[in-house]
Length: 103
Image (cartoon, rainbow, N blue to C red; front, side, top):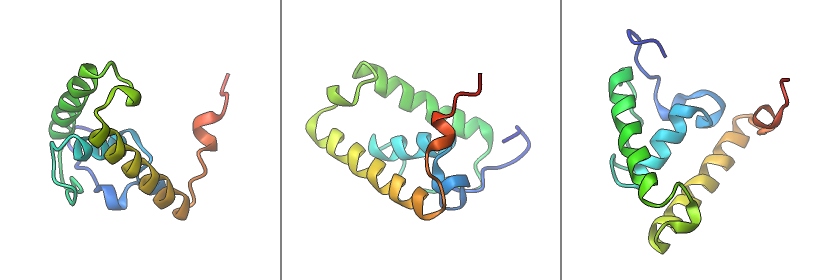
């Protein structure tokens, strides 16, 4: 996404939302920074970066570890991840790209 372009929206994102921006949106929902139904469609890069900074700061409180999240947030996070993986797989994503050794 270049600075002059806008985000297509989580529901229309590549690989069912398994992109860096999709991850930011899922985690922003979990932490309550945006509503569950917010797709961020039409957002410009500065708004995505601002929400990423909030998400990153929140993760820092928990040492960037899922295991350190309070029970309610951990359950919400794991449910969001499970839903995202199912959605991505339905869109043809397998996760193999992320595991490929490009060296």
